[in-house]
Length: 298
Length: 288
Image (cartoon, rainbow over all chains, first blue to last red):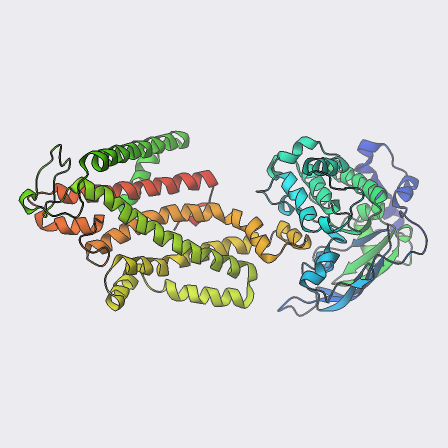
């Protein structure tokens, strides 16, 4: 099952170079280190502080998410890896308040949003957005791309002062968003089924950043894409994080992608964070046995 | 009921595009026929549909009475055309009311889940336990025979199928990521239901409703035939069939005309349902 870590490291980097470098022609470990650098260095207070978050599904004996705590710095990309069913997506849904946590706090911009409901929660919704794994399911098939892109602004953006995506007119706003994710403006009038998988995922990213959130939860954003599109979407996300000063919680079971994107990595198993470390320490011998097992699989 | 779907057997071997053209042609021809007859009857002849004339009873076809007169000397074509507004109007009223009750019920049950769903669906199961004909007969017994009570009976039975259809669609649709994302955009439950979920169920509901329309027309006509629906002298097709029964041997066409009218409208409603099903690409399971 397990291979020596040094051997695994070679195969992991080989995997990393496969996707983006086919297009970009960069592939050294230094280039990745530069890509991972946080937007703002220094001791800024964390933009997201999660403490003791627990979620148990009705009828389940064990919690899906068990006492998870972590901090996400401003401009940082924090990776979260773990096998399927370990609770990564449940954690994401709890952070977005799509599902309710049983216990714990979610400090977002200094305010605990876990106990808030209805109108009190609404102003905080803009600060955290999500990109799901399957863009086909994340877009309403009966809405044109422009209508999907406008939804967040019409609900939450009017109350906020947007700087990068300031709303002047409907067309200009949509065009600006599509430009930001490197899509042609002609796609605005199309329906999701008329777009490729990679284009759809770019649209969901555009929608998520349209109201300039502080935190973007990326729940396996490249899992349903082909290798070329995966690399292109990861490049796009890196660029957006830098230009918009976003903080990412990057969830994936793809250790190579997480290592490429993140400054810090958390490893989740059976609902618990079992390991948390700087990305460059991924191959350290001190890693948790489960982390070493994950590395050896890659 | 088999005759209502007879056209499907005939049309099965015809290609879809051709089938739609044939159906559209048949519907257009029927509409032209009805419009032409209506103009001639209501603008030129202007008979009173309820005025009895015993000296002119059971007359054959003539320019004055294109389909003849019935046993009370009333013009059959006038009553037949006015009967369409009765039969079709009350059928649409029953259908519309069933939709107005069933859709919100199903939406809420499917979206809210939990105890709301359990409560709503047990109520629906309770209504589903009674066949429509039995409910109509019981209601007529309790409240008296009449078209109003018949419509009430149909609504009581029919709303359940819409509630269940909407619920099942909403149950699966509300699990999709775009609904979760709509929540993160701060959309209220009512807005999520109206903007994201209603458009998804509209196609399914439209198909079921158009197929149901034929059944409701048949139900209203058949219950009026046995005297539980429209009361004399209202020109209703089922009641007209009943009125003509004693004269079946001497003037069989008096029964044929309303019978043909019922069959034609039910066929058209079913053709519309088939067309809508193909148009909205609704799966076979949506059929009753």
